Length: 386
Image (tube, rainbow, N blue to C red; front, side, top):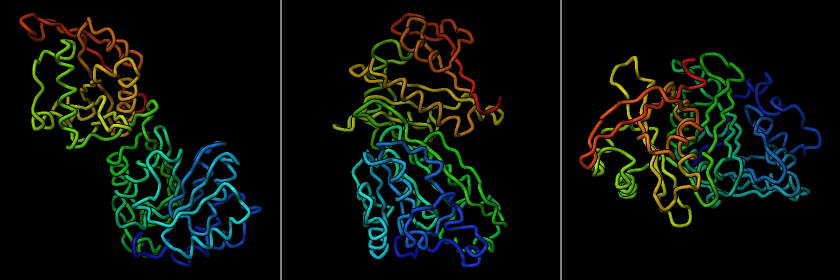
């Protein structure tokens, strides 16, 4: 929000009761200063599924109304953080929360959150992300500070694909309100899965208030699942080679170049599992198109590899579970895989996550002079194309 005032919508919209405290069911007991400073377009705390003992961060906390509501939900053993770029707002929020022990207000921008990685269980925001000039940075930072399995819940303004520019200007939200498809793409690029954008109020002209939900992929302690980057090339290919060396991961004997790897796989639906202490990769998963035919756009093939030193720790399962959820977010309806019959671990993993055997292919290729067969596995989406 660098250089912008936090004014979400025009005064006449507030007068009509579309924004501010009109979005809250119960504001009893809240300081009048927090209520008067509320400029939101929803009530993210009501749907954020906060639980006692958790920590939560409110991006663009203003006078502190959502932080105070969140503090009630997480209780005395939880913490509610508020972040705002305005020193005046931080001062106001601290006055409003003077009698509340489990809150902390931080001065900074939502594009550069002054918290360490994996600091909170939930990130919320109320009609502030649309004001940022760099929404990719905002969502990337939200992903960074969330713990694995953490939740993002944002009240925000969104638009249809063919929005009326006059409607956006009338609401005073012309700082860069995103179309629904662009919002989903940014969430995916940032690493979030299990996306859901629910339109709550139609303001006319293709502009809506909405609740945006997403989660950071879950995985065991000391690990993180995030999108694959070009800087991961060396470690990704090294793990690939170690998998091929086992004789259970494919009929190839040598991993491709990075250029060959990227050309044969989709530019999205690529994830790595990372040791957060050493920053070493311990596994990866990626998708390839099953066909170039437009009718098969929702059918993909996938590969999942875990470093031999880190197998039997649930990493493959966590990677594949995140991949499945992300594929459904992207509209994929069928995931295919080919597995050697004697690779019992991989067969069991895929069956546990909803894959079924649909056939076999004999003598698919030669590996060190021997013909190999494969079992064809397939998983149909439960939410797409049913």
